[in-house]
Image 1 (cartoon, rainbow, N blue to C red):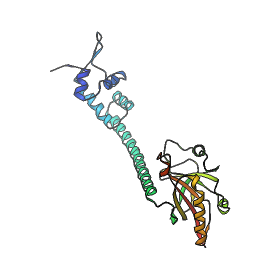
Image 2: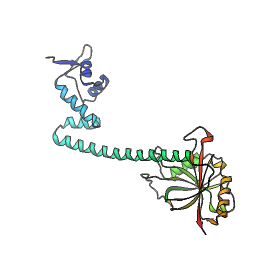
Image 3: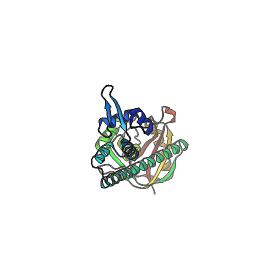
Length: 272
């Protein structure tokens, strides 16, 4: 029976990269039985087989290297149970995170499909549930760079910009809507979704009825559609009761084709 195995032979037997075995040696996780000082070749014995198998098993479970080092320093049943319980809790947390991401992706796909397939320029009466938003009062005019106020919004609410948190919207103040002035906005907001937690208190847009229109274009093309919404409101005897909600559903973040941009305007109204 063979007594010593080269690092290459051990690599093939256990399907572990040679570079990984060298790393395990460097950090003291799997030291060779013998190193030939004349050529620096590493040799392992069969006594390393069980330890390497255990390392592979625990790494497959996602146990970090630091925990493996600790385990092999104080190897016993209680230590293994403690380590696996800790890893199980970590996996449960990651599972929740992945489930949340999966729900966000599904919602985003639904929103994109809805925006693509929705008729453009058609005014509809819709009832929407309440919206949780991170809201910031900020003057903005169509055509200006919106990235700065978005950055200010994120900073103001300590929002981690590496996490996608819903859609960005802007509002025309009610007094400007009543004055037929649509060349400025008074606030910017981020719609929060399930699982989006921010350290500061959010604003709630209540559940209510809206006049809604979607059109091909961006905020710079919105003025004419506000006029159409107000005309529709007057013809039906409705009253506009609050600031607008204006959101680009499809923009440069999704496509380079300007003709594929979709913007939505929502005007909250009451029936007289």
